[in-house]
Amino acid sequence: MTLVPVLTAVSDAVWEAQLVAALGRGDHGVAVVRRCVDLPDLLATAATGQARAVLLSADLRRLDREALTRIAVAGVAVVGLVPPGDEDAERRLRQLGVSAVLPADATAESISAAVVEAVVALTPAPLDLSGLADPRAALPASPAPADEAQLPVGTGRLIAVWGPTGAPGRTTLAVGLAAELAALGWPALLVDADVYGGVVAQVLGLLDESPGLAAACRQANNGQLDGAALARLARELAPGLRVLTGIARADRWPELRPSALEVVLGLARSLAAVTVVDCGFALEQDEELAYDTMAPRRNGATLAVLEQADTVLVVGTADPVGLQRLVRGLSELKEAVPGLVATVVVNRLRSSAIPGDAEREVRTALQRYAGVDALTVVPQDTEALDAALVGGRTLTESAPGSPARQAIQGLAAALVGAPAPVRKRRALRR
Image (tube, rainbow, N blue to C red; front, side, top):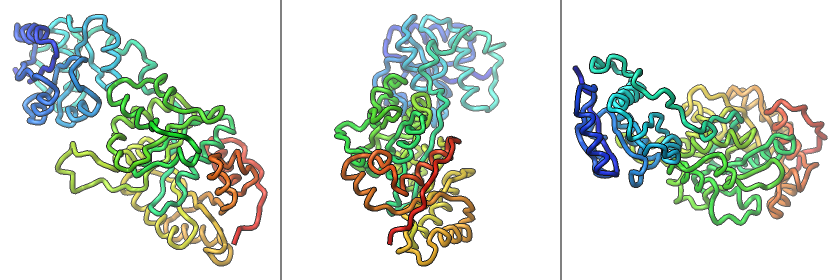
């Protein structure tokens, strides 16, 4: 019979001793190979590959989502143990992503069965389960979380706004799109996830000493984020429009860890009908760090957003340099996120940068060099955009008649299937 090697990491030494003794009595199909004294000891031991699962307590010091991600990458399944009747401890473990949570007074049969179940779920490799005739039969009858509303199961849409290097207008489009969606009656959440320094707060004239997205990721990493907490962190700008401000300093990028950001985005789907995310520009996956799977990746947050998004808007500038970057960016995007279908938006269209019929030339170039048949064109309107920026307002508020605003309004309507607004065609600025 093959025994499943198990680690333990339980804060209460007496409780842990009783657990190990209970598992050691009889043939339960598991064997405790090491009792870890703290989280660093657990992480180091898990990385050695000598165990397939770990039994840990909810009050283990410094236990967070990042640590659990490292344990999972090491191929070690996690089973949580909580004091009987402690709903808060159980809720925290489930919010951290631990699906198997049992009371500490559970029988050795139930605990060992949960271990085998977790190992099978983590890795489909065949195991010798002869020590447990039916490992699933010993599991508690109702392992589901007590409060389903705490889980990120929202059905709202997620729209990512991405563009290549060169400031093509990602933030302008993201802010305008969120405002237009709210104006159309679709509750919107604007998220600034630019790891190179977000400016959404400055564009909207917000005094932002504590970035909302960083705080949300911090709470998600600690297993403390739920829908109510996210709603408190998302500032309300107008009826139906909220914003999670981003990090203004580029050196704070480690605060936006992909595993935590995915939890935030999942809960955002419950908070708003549409979530619009302003992404960073870089897509490099730091291949030189591939040997170390635990090394933080600066662009991990951007890639996580793009992978989670229902719709990706790719923004480029309507000039020779901007169009070249856009064509290359589309190719890089397809490599970084295989299977992604992007919606292209060409920003700052003006006849002074492209001779002749500027819009027709742009469409022809993108169809020829990138295979783009459909795109949205946003005309240049420097005066309206400058006025909005100076006043810390959206184009929807400050310049409803702006051709740039009308183009973004039409894009918002198309994304949610609303009737397209009537646009007044105006000559392009030179």
